[in-house]
Length: 154
Image (cartoon, rainbow, N blue to C red; front, side):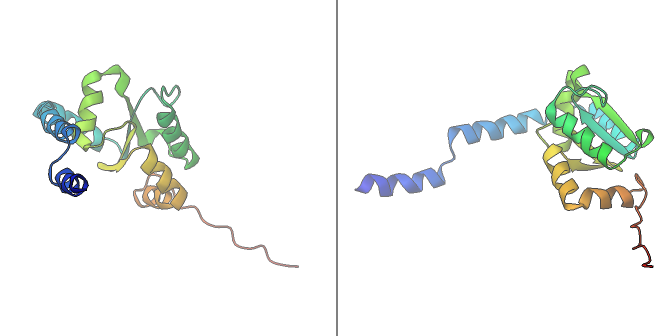
């Protein structure tokens, strides 16, 4: 009878070993990105209006999430001259560094005007809600789409 009541508060007060280990790894991982690497990534994300770090290329994505991100951007008509992509599979330092830079654990990662937007899940949610189109128009990446007015009745 007392074991249950004694055990429950201890679980809440004392963090679990896996959680403590994960936290220590996260702190340790932040130390691996050099100032030079951080500066190079910062330069890359601000060099183009839209930057996508992905697995593969837009023509040959090597991951379903990267493919989905490219398809969403294509649905919105993002011009190729406004989108710069980086294949993280070609550079292991970039692959790990971009995750630390953005503090986001997955790839793909989208940046608009130097600001981190999110991964595939965020991009998909923004697309579904209409927020992505608003952001792309506001950032001058795609033109405002004018709604056709109703045709006059005869």
